[in-house]
Picture 1 (tube, rainbow, N blue to C red):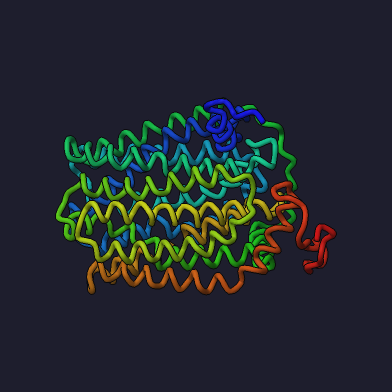
Picture 2 (tube, rainbow, N blue to C red):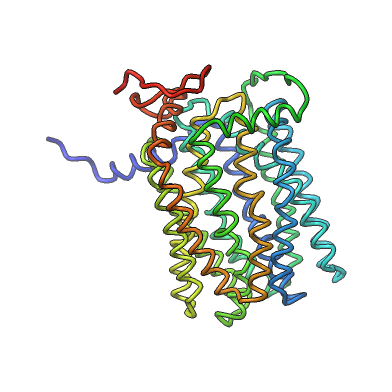
Length: 446
């Protein structure tokens, strides 16, 4: 028996984690988006700190979170129809250009010392509308960059690692810049960062995508996508879980400036460290998910992750030590990343291609569209009972959501398995779902 050569195992692991990089278009997208996301995280941190510095109000932090995400609930379904009908790359170039303009306007207002709270609210609303279109289009665009469908799950996980890997850089850099030159420079850097992703999109060489012409009015297609998602048990269950977590758990992030300043008695550096700790955990989780060969076992992680997340943020609410808080937030970021990416992967594995844009718009609604209501409630509760108690309640509710989701796990695993096999994402065996009747039937694999 021959022993593996030194480094052979590491090389195999790298090739497994990075296998989606064999596609040039995906490499271009990953590089451009990485630069852009550093700026996005810088703007998010600078925005929260600017609002809290100007107002000292936890409630207004919730208001900003609300207006920046509430358009997702109303705009994303229609953006999903456009993603199924039109050229997704051109749509993405348009949304990135509009987001760039928003960042430059915000930078000009802050650097000139003329910014007011109503400016921030209006510009946050405009960016929310742009993001409501951008996210479902970008999510459904991944499949066009990956020529082998077995690499789709890996690409989705790598996207998540990119999103949260940049979270390690952006918040810390923003914290330093805010202390040195103020929030305006962060917005300026974010505006410039969009150039990278626009250039990467223009440089791609894509195969023409077969488009199904619109069958009728846009509203009819929106309702068709909604009916399709609700009739699929795995898609419906995961959307409801994400919506519940977005309402009661994920809004803890908007209260981190309060923890940094009033609970941990720090400043913008402390806020940046808290964000970075969460991002580090998310990044590690994304790398773990990227190393998985397929979606087998992800449904089990969907039960464990919200429970772990809830326990972590509840523990964080009681911490008064920066070191302990950072350690807890690492694990909360890990759990949140597993939940979000695992559900994204399974949904993209089981969904029909001609409805991908519309289903991913519903995913965006569940993940981002419900969050503004959670942010508003969290801000209101923090103003009355304090941020620590608010986060503790959110943690308890997250654990409850995990328990409810676990009740439907067996059916979810069967249905996800059958959909994944039809699209090349899972091995043979299990249950199949008849496309015409929608009924479950045993396949010959078992």
